[in-house]
Length: 215
Image (cartoon, rainbow, N blue to C red; front, side, top):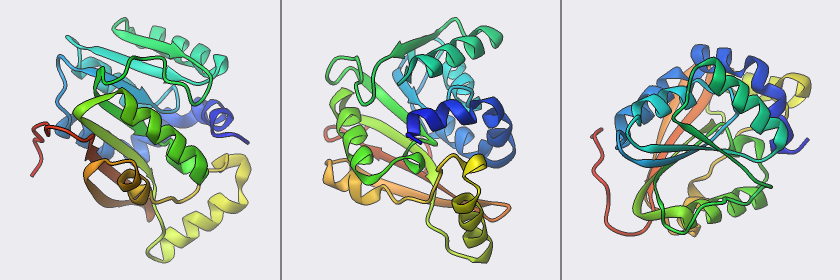
């Protein structure tokens, strides 16, 4: 299953997963990002709670949600109508295209994306993200991290063998890829919820650095 199909497949219950397992990471993104009047883009499953949080926090700016299939676009459209997100702009394109101009974004959020991808796809996506980020622009990512304990290994084993639930989600480490593509000052926060290994990463595109609120 491709990660695009996986995003569509998990969307029905993904909002519940975020609220139970990963809501802290979405709150950290709001704390660490410079929103309000920013040009922001989100890549995530279309029912992610974080989409609504970011779009509302960036009320006076422009928030794009990138949809890499018509199915995801339709699901995102329904969710946006349900939650009255008139300020959210949906982009539909074939993966890995990002239909935006070079250097036009202040911040990109890639949540629950890279843990559905293979290495070549991670490289391809990060290359596109770096292209659309302005110099010094902010990048945030949340994904399933490499296991570092018994419970984390149990989660990874369950996700590996229960593909009907995990849809291919697997542990990854994107820090080496960020360095390859020139992202500056990558920082990783290792979190856990009921033993599930969560990684919260932030970095900057090359250029003058934005202010970060969390020290």
